[in-house]
Image (cartoon, rainbow, N blue to C red; front, side):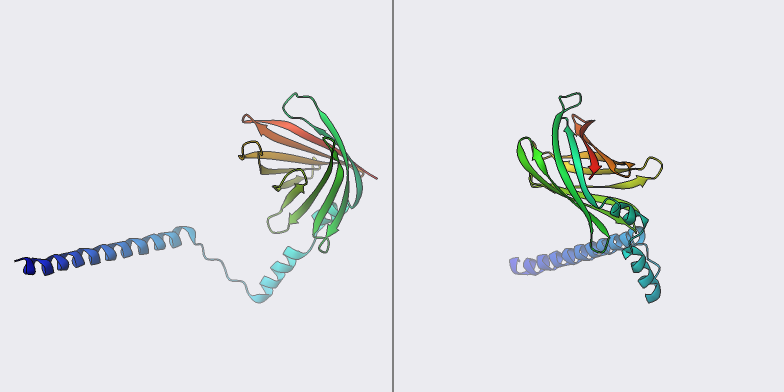
Length: 213
């Protein structure tokens, strides 16, 4: 009896296993088909001439890059910091050497000065993406090990650029949002304002007045 029952149990197990595999395969196929239907929008193919034209437009510096190039030179930076809203302001100073790199496609600024009694060095880059029509800035310095990245657009009416990003709070390791407003005051003056978030409330944490030498 045991000898007859064992093959039967094996046969039943194989039947249900195959049925389960077939069901799983059908569900997986349906899921893939749904993803293709919902998320995959076929792109209209471009011929080689159109592709080349698009890449040339993407890689060619334009008027935004010319505006960035106008800042080439050395700038004196008067820096003010606030630890919290309404707090006591702390002062620092630095110089920024600005130049265009990679064929006039990107702006690079190198900062040197003193902050909290310590030598300060920083480097920023600024890019205008011809495809996305927005600016992206990065910043690193010797006061930490992270990189700040923000992006946004330029408002020709206010002559200012608003850039939004996130930064890591070194006190708790959490990411917090921040905002920069960069204003072209006149041909030889720039103002950069930075807004941090503390206790879920935005406040002005830094202001830099830049004067071109």
